[in-house]
Length: 233
Image 1 (cartoon, rainbow, N blue to C red):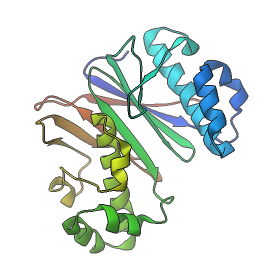
Image 2 (image 1 turned 180 degrees about the vertical axis):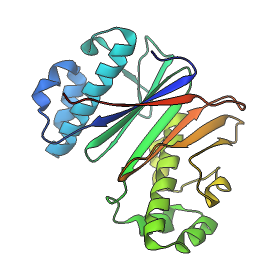
Image 3 (image 1 turned 120 degrees about the vertical axis):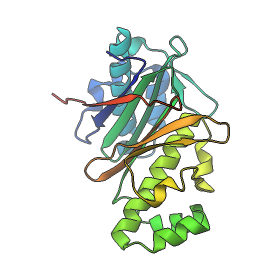
Image 4 (image 1 turned 90 degrees about the vertical axis):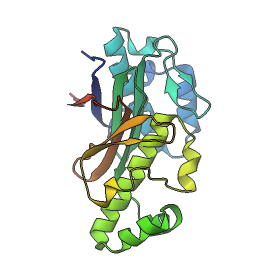
């Protein structure tokens, strides 16, 4: 049961061996059409599996069959449920893993990266990080630099998603309102953005991933985070 004081975090396996045909009936016509536009079959499979899992989980909260959910989209392409706007969610994926965060009434964003996948992280760091942050990053060992850059990246992406901002900004500059906090690693902390909104930033990484959850919260309390694993059986 999802309460207003909780965030449910779902880890979703998206294996290349999973048959897409088994889940296509859960998708809407526009989702199936979108899947056909992917150039790479692996990306199409990932999209179909992710959307089917999203529909199944949200349907379970609402007591509805997955195929009965109707999504609308923000100008930035983020899906939401116009008939139940208080059910907030964020879905992301990297490689064969998906990550879904669900909560009530609170804006939320989540992002995940497989740490070994970004071969160009040094160039990305030079281009995107503020000078002072980049200098601190360069003082670390290679492995620490790689993991720190992945952490900066997923925090920034998750915050943009939670705020509903265009993801194109990620190509230009990584703004870090938590700059002081990130000089030493902590698993979770709160920040205030320029509008005065308080956000909880939480490290939800596991194994070979870096993953961040960002959710709006009152200044004096953050939600409980409950983690689930999707069962393939």
